[in-house]
Image 1 (cartoon, one colour):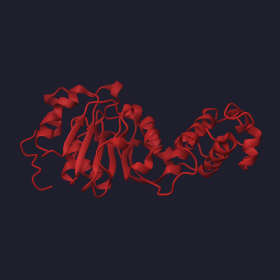
Image 2 (cartoon, one colour):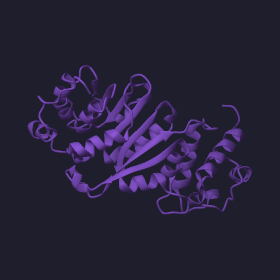
Image 3 (cartoon, one colour):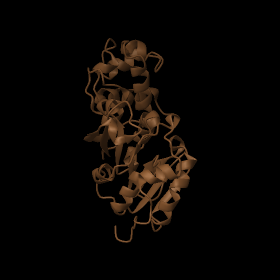
Image 4 (cartoon, helix red, strand yellow):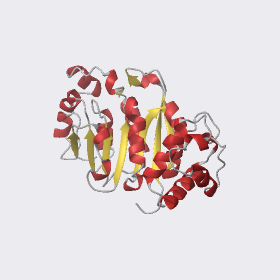
Length: 282
């Protein structure tokens, strides 16, 4: 972007060394430093001009630089590690007001209140909280324009998994209900510092335009109960959800002897709709 000059900044690798940013396991940190990989992630996020781009766990700022260079209107980076917050200050200084750092726990932040719409979330997510973050965002997905996120490859496979497969679960149902999902590309472990024990996948999620016919929280609870005991029949796994679970299942057209992994995402939505109808107001 015109006026965005990185020539006076140290490289990402040098930033890591200068600030002693040894990746911390309890933060799930695995840093990307290859500019070509970082640029590829920023391009996968689409047109960022005029958008508020929310980044989680920027670390030494490699992806942050790529997002600014790609023309992001405003980048708000949420970072919990104080070492990284300090290391990012030179980048803030040369960003011409387009970069803001929030020193907060990403799990406690409502991303739908950050900046002005359209909001785009782009992040190399910390592995240890990636699923929890995504579930939070999915429940308010229509407030976001899109999300381009890096996960462990096995998590990405769960996002697109179909019923009756080993990978299919609660995350599959929620992601496919709220979003259109595109697997962009894989990255080997060697692309990271330090290399994780698994491959990673960049995934783009675009929220569906149609409103959900039930409260997101109802669907989330239903899937949590059902897949929390996925080997059990739904009659058993959902028995504490409603006082007349057999009646609820029958009204939703679901057999009480079925298991969670046999139901498609739309079946869970129907269960949630029927639950709310039977529960009544309040």
